[in-house]
Each structure stands twice: as structure tokens, then as C-alpha cells.
Length: 232
Length: 313
View (tube, each protein chain N blue to C red):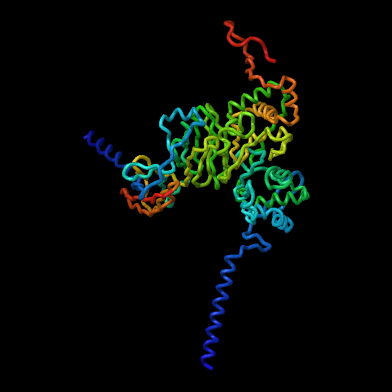
């Protein structure tokens, strides 16, 4: 008798999150056409980084995967799910081997950003914000992480002036419902209450696309985005 | 007769259509260069000492239009009609990012910072020394500049950095400055002799993607290249505030106040043709900067003889 009582309790406990947390929007981002070949980066001016890459790394403007998957696309809910509060956890952006890891990060307005220098050389962090404040700070090796926040939604290009090949992006959003495509080009936006949503996919070179999706309950809605590759 | 009336009616109609079309076309092609700004702007004030500047006086408006708009544009966005011919480009006031500040990187300058920049001009650029204005005019123009960006209504200027008293110019300070110059990798842009020929110098761009060169400290006999003032205090400020909008970052999170002063003293020795206390001290010591020796700590040496014996200088 007891066992079945507990059994029911466990069953309810496992079902509860699904009942509470709503539907999911997921899918894939792909490209059509032929993307421009990414160029190898010459790091010879920075030997401490060059030696970390026995095969030179390439630029990351367009990163692709198998089956025409397009990586580094920020897919997010641009209407219908604005979150008023920033998560308390910081988002980390690391400089390693004179590259930004990851190439694109997404964070909420007001959420803390932590920039780490894991290299033997100095970098300067220069988010080229046009809507948010533009700042520029030096970060020698061994310094503590640099912390900052952004108040306004904006896609901010980030560079290091000392190492001109370094490029990254901060996607500052009003929502915590975002997913950045990685291997395979897939994205998933879970925990969506019933409602009407606009989903936006942003790629640093191929631009922005939107789709409207309605969630009625706990279903998973599948949508895909396809970007046209640019010739240059 | 009837035909004539018909022709007359239709030709009038045609004229009317043409007139309306022409007027609409005119309204789109011709920019609003009338005596009023294209969009209504907020009223801003500036406070410098005991002078208060106002953005909404007819004088401020006509001064801006007469002296500033040609480069900085009617909308303050740096797109004045002269801008295409200029390098560096005129400041875009709508972004509220300014080079010469006493406030930390990413923050708004104080009214006094802007007031001083207008007066001083920006050497090696097309921004003149505006010594033709009265202080009141300058203060009014500072207020006017603040109308171009919504940031001025939403945030306060940063807290001005505190500049401690300058320590004496000693060989130790210069030598430490040189050690910092190497450690902080200033030479990557500025070059080992500060000639602006470091390995990264050729690839530098400012925040508007325009090529920009790092300062060549060795050029010239004077301070004519320093845009944000040329006293030792002004140079100290640059390290702690960065030159926003350019590759020059702020080192405020990385160096101490005495580090910054040591860098200032070393920097002056890079200005090889400029007469300075620093160059005098260097000359008196024989002309070469010795390697920096870390001062032994105040703690007593361990009995096993660890660490260098002897006291400070």
C-alpha cells in the first residue's frame, strides 16, 4: 500500500515539472549555397599564442557543420517572453590562444559578464557598443577577471586591438530564452508557457530572420531557419 | 468651345498633380537646413565653476550651426558636410563616447572635460582651439552638445579619477616605468622606443573602423601630439581613463597610482628631444635606464640568508 502511495508521489513529482514548465520550440539552423572559405589566421606576431595552434585556426565569421548546419546562430524569443530579471550567474568569455571562447555569448541585460584572460599575453577587451556604453580595458596575463554589465539589448561586436584577428560577439538580450547553435546547428528553447512567441535567429554575417510560433501546452514545436550564404 | 473647356480642365488638373508631386519630391530631396534643428531636443545645462550653460538659447543654437555643424553635423552625429574630407573623423556626439575625460572608461565626461576640450582643441586633427568663444558661449555649447545623446538624461558622468600628488622624479621611478611599459606590453602598439611602430600598430582601427596610429612619443621637441592636455597630470589621467573610441585602453584595474606615475616619468624619457625633468635625471645618471630592481620587502630577512640583504636606496 505504502509502496504504491510513494509510487504515485514519484510519478506526480516527475510529471509536475513537465506540467509546470510548458512547451519547447526547437529546430535546426542551416544554410544554402556555398559559404566563403574561412581564412587561416597568422598569429606569428604573438608567438605565445601561435605555438598553441600547430595547425593555424581560421576566422570564425561563418562556422558550419555537417549537413549544412550553421553554427554560432543566436536563436531567441524576441517577443512574448521578456524576462524582467537578469540571472544572478555570470556569463564567462575567455581569451585563450588569442581567440575568444566561445565566439558568441548571449546574456541578459543587467547580467554580469566575466572576461577571463587565460593567455600569457596582454589583451584589451573592447566591446564596440553603440547603444550601450563603449569601454576599453587592458587585461594583462594573470589579472583577475574583468566584470561588467550591459543595460540595453544590443548585439555588440568585441575586439582586441592588440590582436586584430580576434573577434567575438555579445548578444545582450531582454530574455533568458535563448540558444546558440553549436555542433549540428540545433537549438532548443524549453520552458515556454502557453502563448504567442516571435523567435529570432541572428547570425553575425547572414543577418536576422524571425518566425512566429504559438505554444498551447506542453508540446514541442519544431521550426527551422535557413540562411542564404553570402558570396563574399 | 466645349473641347477647349475640357482641355483646359485637364491641363489644370495635370498642373495640379505636377505641382503636388514636385512639392513632395522637393520635401524629400532638400534637407531641413532651416534655422531650426530637425528634431526637438531636450533642454540641457552645463555647470563649470560658477558658469551655467544653457542649450536652448538662440545664441547657443546659432553658434553651433555657425561653428560646429559643418563638421559635427546638424544632428551631432559627426556627419557634417566637411566630414568626408577629415581624418580623424569629427566626434559623433550621439554616441556620447569621448576621448578626453577625467572619468573612467565607458562613463560620460564631466562638463568641465568637454569645456576644456572645446577650448584646447584636438591637436593633429581639424578640431581648432576655440579661443574665440567667451566662457559663457563655451558653456552653452557644452550644454548643446549634451542634447545629442539620450545618455546625458539617463546617467550621471563617471566619478572623476583622483590624481595623487606627483612623486619625485627619480631614476627608480623611470626604471620602474620602463619595466611596466614592457610588462604591460605597451610596446606592442607604441613600439619599444615609443615611436608608434609596434607590431600591432599598423592594424589599429578606431571604433568607427578608421585606421588610427598610436602616439609616436619620440617625434618633435614638444608636447604638440598630446590631444588631451600635456601636463604630467594629463598623461596620468590617460592611463586611468583610457582614450575611449580608440584602441588605447584604461589600465585603472591593472596598475596602482604609483605605477601610473612611474609610467608617466618613463614616458617623458621617450620624448627624447623634449626638455624635461625626467630627461635631466636620465642624463645625470648617464643616459641609460638601468633594469628595475624590486625593492626588498620590509619583512626581516630569514636567518638562512634568503633574499637580498641591504636596505632601500
